[in-house]
Image (cartoon, rainbow, N blue to C red; front, side):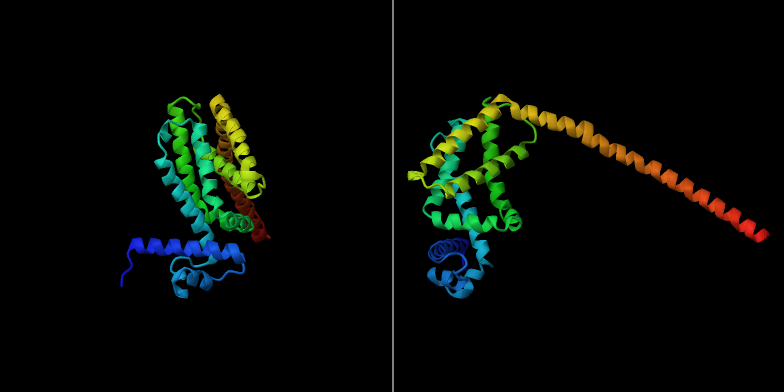
Length: 257
């Protein structure tokens, strides 16, 4: 019997939910794929059709949460009228709210992922792309409303913001304050600084300097290097000719002798 895409999505959700429960109770290392699959109500082989390894389950969890986050932002009334800071703060706090129910699992997952940064980098690319795409839309809208000034290297800025979200998430993982109030305050204060920097045009000035240095120094040095090689080739050819000429003269000399 052929399984529909809707049924596949439902099976995947059940497996993820079971994984969160099992791993929260037993820990990542002590949990098995068989236990997770059986907890979800399926045979052992089923889970491998969706997640080849336990590590894949961790990344699937975050991918789903970020997808849910994008959809949630679309349902907030008049979200498009929010200021840039309000959008970023709502997005960040909504994401952490989604994590809250599974906090123990999320803390463990972050610890495991930071233990293998190279693998984490490649596995997180789809999640990062999904998140930074929505953030970039916030920045573009803020530009149109003159909330912030125009700047170059936009992908660089959104990547920096992705790193900032990672820092906030780690802070949240270690926050012991009542109701995570310290994290809320940290987000509020830090976003004030981020938005103020974007509004002041410091990013624009910084990227202009970076662009100037690249064009007038780094790029020009590459051009100079490329000019060296033809000269080097000419010198190399001339030396070869001289060596061949000398060799010929030596041969004539030996022949004479």
